Image (cartoon, rainbow, N blue to C red):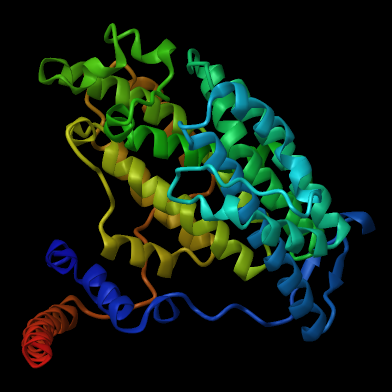
Length: 415
């Protein structure tokens, strides 16, 4: 089905085929192992040479391990917050004290009903690995875990009312993740200290991703009984947030959607500045890919009624192409330009937020975005790609048929 969606887009079809046949290693280039010079703020901005390959490899392994433990700790914390079977009276102290459990070797929680409950049941393994980390990594993880736990507890019985509250909620659940990761990147010396010190930019990275998810997941959240759209915005259009799902309110729903997307677009200048500071290729890929995926998702959601009727997702071929291309700053800027132009040309004249949307896109354009379309690393002619598509489609059909025949044969033999 995903191949069919890409039939009118030869490059996406080709990239998706490469991904299906070879996995992520076929679409993401090898990490840059070449020695680089990076700006050292402690030496008045002079360039310093990095240490040899072995030291870089050790730092990368240590930093990567810390990021993995950071993820597991926050996944465990998030599992507690999401578990609706835990009473508020019990959940609040758990969230407040969760950071301290990292130093309790035997602490675990066996009563969760969440699908990710294993991280709570096996928490002693996670906390043990945490305590093996260097102190500089432990300090970051504990600090972020503590702040996030208190923030989650604050919003357990609290609705997101204003746009300021929306930013605050997104800070607790995602902005802090961006700040923590940035501090880990700097602590590992994979990135310069300014990356970890500039918490405003790191926070914006997280807010942009979280707001994109909240905007896109309107219908799913409604079905699950969750509400994250700021009341200050949606109450200007309807009496209840759930009213947007009613067909008679679709015009108001789309107007509110466009206003929230315009709000999220204000983080893109910070995203560009943050990514421009990164020097390590692995870190750059890790940070850039989710951001360009979010930008593509907002472009797909903008002025789109489908957000209130079903699921809006970018195509898999599109996602693979973004992963392939978002490996350097010029390419990322070209991707941003492409989707900003896509939104700009779809702004309805009658939309209440149209002027604000044009204004923020104009601001984004001023950040040295290219005025040309992104040129992919795959320089193949449309005729050649069309031929490859046809050949691949026929091959895929043949392989699928062969696979089904083989499966039927095996099942017959088993019986």
